[in-house]
Structures are given as C-alpha cells and as structure tokens.
Length: 132
Image (cartoon, rainbow, N blue to C red):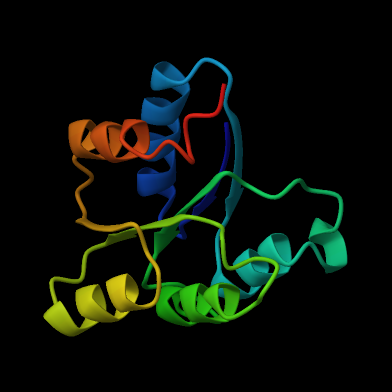
C-alpha cells in the first residue's frame, strides 16, 4: 500500500507514521507538509514527478500555502486523478468543513487526535485500499 500523508504538524506526522508502519507491513509512506507540495505530488509534477500515485491520501485541512480543502477539490476535479481516495484528518469540528470534504469526494472525515482504530477500520473496509 502506498500512502501520502499531508500534514504540517511534526507530532502528528510521527504518531500517524508510527501507527501506519506498525499496522501495515508492506507500506510505502511519503509525507509532504503543505498543500502546494501535495498537489505537485498527486499530479506528479516538479520535484515529485518520480513518485508513484498513492493508494490513499491522509490529508490535514489546516496546511501552509494551500489548505486541504482546496487540495481535495483540485485533485477531485482532475479527470485522471479524481479516483484517488482521501481521508481527511483535522482539528476542525466545523460541519461546513466536514460537509465540504465529503461532498467533494473524501471517503471519511476524522477529527484529531486521530482514533487509530477508526482509521484502521476505514482503511480495511475500503477494498480499493486493500489490494492483494
């Protein structure tokens, strides 16, 4: 499984990375820390052109340069990239953020601190993410 974690908080990166590496043996995890780099990574452009497309994106909303909702919207409106699944990870409890994310194609919206059991359940329940 290839996962892109888009997160600017170093502690959240460490906790999420630790959980994912413990849970998934064959994991290729990449991390970017701002929305502009996330878009470049997902569109495989600039210094991110050599990376494979991820099977899943874990996306924070409050990011430098370009916020997570805009990243989601850009990718979901790019025809050859709109299939990429997103799980939103955010401290925002605003219904407007949650509704926007889900209406624009996110699989799920999870509030931080991250509930790792819930994340595990979401990943394992989506056959698109559990490739053989």
